[in-house]
Image (tube, rainbow, N blue to C red; front, top):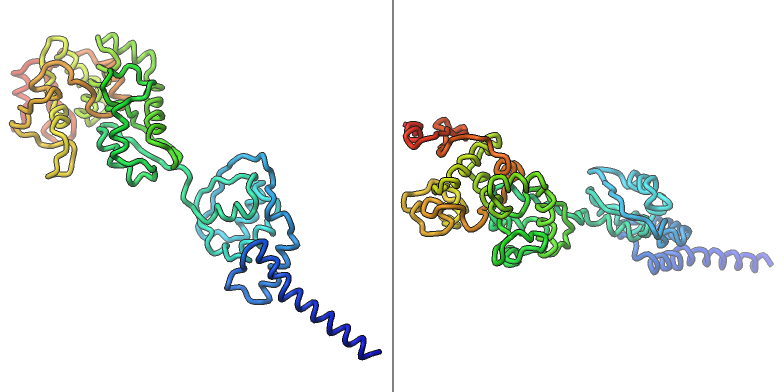
Amino acid sequence: MRRYHLVLIVIALLAVVFLCIGYIPARASLLYGPPARSLSIPDRIEYSTRLLAHGDLLTTPLNPNGFDQTFTIEPGESIASVAARLEEALLIADAQTFYDYVVYTGLDLTIQAGQYKLSPSLSIMDITRKLQDATSEDVTFTILSGWRMEEIAASLPTSGLDISPEAFLSAVQTPPQVLDFVPDRSSMEGFFFPDVYILPRTTSVDQFLDIAARNFASHLTEDLRSGFNAQGLDVYQAVTLASIVERESVHDEEMSLIASVFLNRLNIGMTLGSDPTVQYALGYDSLNGTWWTNPLSLEDLKTDSPYNTYVYAGLPPGPIASPSLEALQAVAFPQASDYYYFQAQCDGSGYHTFASTFEEHLGNSCP
């Protein structure tokens, strides 16, 4: 009888051993993937048992109707802290379940510091996978005032957007409908409002152009339109002049005075004589790696282009760059003056000296 009981005990122990070493790890591996290689056999058994005990907590979202929220993991933050904060943020139901899963899979070693968009509509397993890639779903794309379209295009390859410079420069030839004041057969040059744009990585080129165009249109207030009209300019003409003012100005506080010089010249049929328009006409300077050749030679000033405002009177055919809001305001509300000339001061400060007559202008020349 004792021998019989002993046999039963041995069988029971073997069953327990089989359950612990065989079935439980195999079942956990089937449901949740293989365990981390770094786990010892006792740890594999322990974490496999824990995962099976958690049941549906690993695969069931806390709130199927939940919304995305931003969750940040700090550099050097412990997994225990991450787990606790996920639960506190109501993104997961149980911190211990998350902790056990990431340790079991070894994913605790590959969770990255960074900012994530997470939702309680994701399961713990889904959230863990999201935490393996700290690449933001959005990109920050900056358009600087004074940039021409080619400079915007050149910044795209490193932006995180899947838009090639070639696709961009092709698409800008057809402005979105919101820019209904842009003449037919004209591009979007000048109508990329300088700003910081937060865009999904999946943004297409057409979506990008629409967002930029709507941003420009939203800043085109009735006050600005009225100001343009008071200067005898329609919106397209005003943006064209503002783009020249933008490129001519170093200090914003001088923009309204520079705008007055050009408006005074336009009113008497005098050429604008603006270097940036010649730079635009010349295009890319491969020698110096810039779109804005500087200094210009006497031959450059003779360039036969409708954009050369030394040769042709009036405004050029269109904008030469993206003007800032300050440049647009300067054209709409210029400072009253009798100036027809300006040139850079000799001290390298970026400020200008203004003159009413050509004789005064010559007198302001640097030694």
